[in-house]
Length: 328
Image (cartoon, rainbow, N blue to C red; front, top):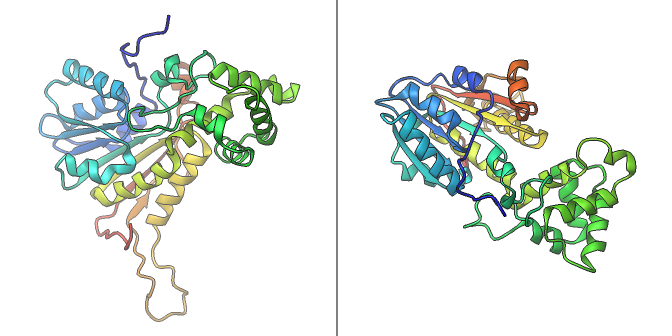
């Protein structure tokens, strides 16, 4: 019997102390958690801005939104909040819905949440059998992992596994998938795991779970995560108040590179050759980057929450004199 999707949406907030220190939310401020999840971070942020401030939470998962409402009612009932369904790639539209003019603190905790991993029906886990789904928002996304596995050509599968999963065996896995689906569709998570294991050399099977990188790549492809991240960060820079803080926690190198790139681009000044008498590029810095190297979880947290092991945090602050470049 499958587990009900109405089970409590548990969430252990990653690097919570670091988030609170870097965002430093103050009473009366507006905070926006762009990845609400089970509201672990948001509850603590709300406590610090209540009762006059506003906590905005964004998530594309109905279960997360419902769990966050329950948690707020019991833990911070006095806090003003507004939870909105959507993806942070549409942050402009969502903040218009929230009727705010600017935001003091933004948090992005990127990646799949623990409840999505733990509930087999969602299809994110390679440990339990379930339909190959992996959609974070099933109501608005028709592309599933099964569609990708059974209909993408071998070259596209290889590219996805190599780029999004950093999978060295990408060509072998893609070839095995295409060979298998020629006789029968691959419909479930464990059917795919079996194909991956057969495709890999014996030595690779004994390392970390052989399907880990493939499942990561499929999840990113199904949910268009990397494009959404770049658009969301650029929108956050637009909406941040002067002195506003933007904190991003990522979990693999692709995400971290995007955060570093966007922060870097928005912190650059003039790029004209030094011998030009006047600036013609028009570039002005919008953000000040606080973390040249990403922050990581401490040993005590890693013992309590192993999923924090791959977490990297980057932080930027909106300049007081900032004006965004054209097209941002």
